[in-house]
Length: 356
Image (cartoon, rainbow, N blue to C red; front, side, top):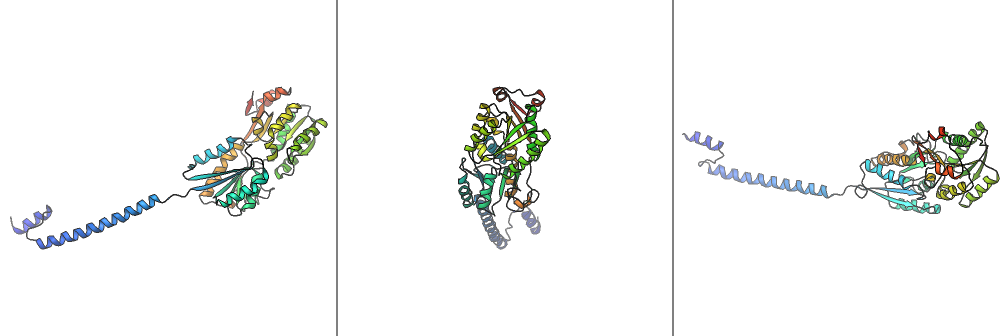
């Protein structure tokens, strides 16, 4: 084999040629340099990867402000469950700061201010009583309403389609509800002629509900007596006026004061054998006779989608306020029997839930 042939074979076998010692030494030195450079590059890359892995991900902080825990815990759980379905896990990528006034409404401003000091990313409010102090506490932190009666009338948003500020969310207002409730009372009490409307009349949402009820009363030939509830003492006074005025039934309006005193309201109505229809399903949990209205749990669940959009960069001003799409009709036959009332079959079949 010739010298040239031997070199070619050695190169293919990666065996250094005996006749190229100088070249071989240079090659080794170059290989060492390249190996060193690669090792340094790998080390830097690994350090970068470790640093990136160790860098904590941002944990979103959600403030939840409520006037009372009188509302069913199922609503709060509906909100949390919806967040989980959207990929949020408490303690990992979100923290919820719960602030409840437990019916002490004068504490709400301080609780709202506390959430602002915590620099939460978004504040969720459970009704107008908590939305107002949140609005007064911040004009920059996004606020998501879960179930406000009348966001426009309350001055929280410029319009449902274009909120225009840092507040958006959901409204439980539906103009036809008040008339429908009076219609249901008329169906279960055929001789209905006098109805007492009891609630927080200055509440913007209730003001509109009262107007709608008055229109329906004219169509049904029913006389209304509206009584304002500003505090717990007004409930007993209101029912006494209803009895004195020989009312045939009671139509309750929503509001934090009435909701917090719902047990007392249901008991007084039953004691005086007065059929009553309520604006929230919470009354049914404590023995109320009849409820027709939006599913508040559904509104709480849908509020989570607003939180998700805001955390991903959406602005409240660009998110239209939604109105309820899911409604419930619940009848309590136990309560009906207690006051000697028979619910007509054609009304029963329309109920989503019948308590027996």
